[in-house]
Length: 254
Image (cartoon, helix red, strand yellow):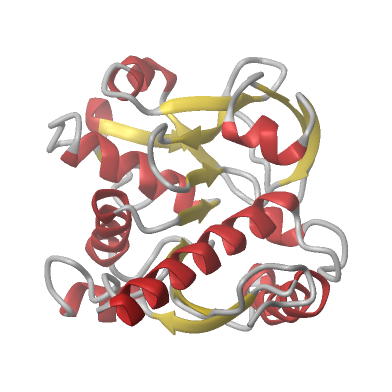
């Protein structure tokens, strides 16, 4: 059976990792995006909100290993930093499509620094204001809360392929970003920064070779009014459904 778009029909299980709150605009936007993905793109996602404390309590894998995709949503500081990091690590190591936005971007960098680069002391400045030189994530020189800004996209990157452009304007709602003095630690171990603001500040991270691993400091879920999903959200959903289809095919084969 196929959808109206010609894709094989399958429902992907999506883990929305974050501490859900009606006061967080991006959280309120998610249901509308899921509906738009279903009606416009034929992409079916069965979404489960998983609080970060619940992820931590689930143990090393965070309980997300059975999902087809993991989205670490905005809303920092998370109630459990360890929970957010466990979910991201599982998605990275097990090839589960991953999207991290705003705080999800920040924690994706933190997870990579600790578990791939071996920098166990890497800290998030919002969670630990006295982190000093250990801070990987630091206050932005100018807060981007409620701002829009241009981005330059690296040609040949996944993001450029998804957007079909090397320049975009995106909406932010954050006050913390990467400490640029630590950039080399991450790129030296394979993390690619493929979107920068005009001053060269990194705003998009990708993991080459992963089925889908994209983290953005901006919030693509806030694009427009939510009736037309941002291309990155749509590409993430497509990767989730593709994983669900493959899982179903493998199960049938057995």
